[in-house]
Length: 153
Image (cartoon, rainbow, N blue to C red; front, side, top):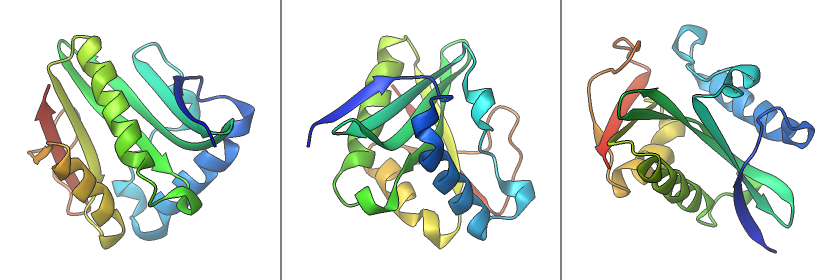
């Protein structure tokens, strides 16, 4: 199949499965007070660029870059459907978003991800791509269920 990554609206009707699965996985082993994903409608704002990876036209992954102000940004809502994992789609999407952030003039990109075992693969990917652990940034506070990471672009 043909893989594409494009900027899209998070409100697209064919993205329902991505958002349902993303939400279900976040709620599966993370206490509600530690879930930091944005509701779908809050991803549709000017300071957020939302990306969709499609395989043969079917949405299989998503992610977003949020401008935090100045030269800093945050990675948000990165998710690959379980049945499409193991194909390098996360790495491909992450690298695409890093290129976008650089082209947008950002100098730093940070993220919050889970500390639970179910997030180990994501943390490993971020480490391999150059992210390092950091203290909470922006409005985040210390949370035993969160790992904060950042990288200079």
